[in-house]
Image (cartoon, rainbow, N blue to C red; front, side, top):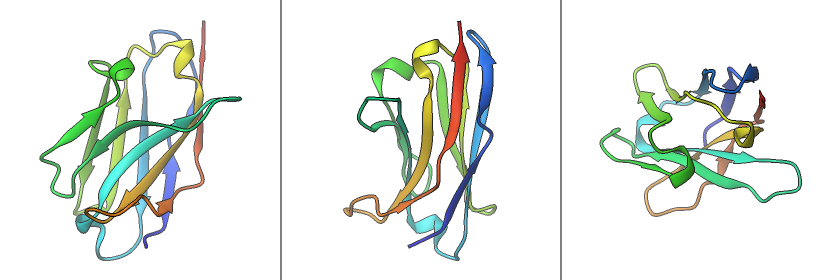
Length: 118
């Protein structure tokens, strides 16, 4: 497992931008698929975006396509989520998570709050 620490959340007006960062400890970060998830009050946690270990493949949920970009810097052991054109429905606690290939996500950060005001 790796230890993950998210940062970059906050309060922003609709249409604004935020960049989330997730710093990982450990020497094997580059072996992990990384994902960003979110959970709004009263709702189940949902996947937002994922990126493979080498950064060559990404996935986005439909509601964030064209607005969010996931990226990673394996030299810095960090994964990012650039969020543009934010909407009130993006309000949630955002978590990053790590998974080895063909394995479930089993390392999670503590979460960072994102609040988008209308």
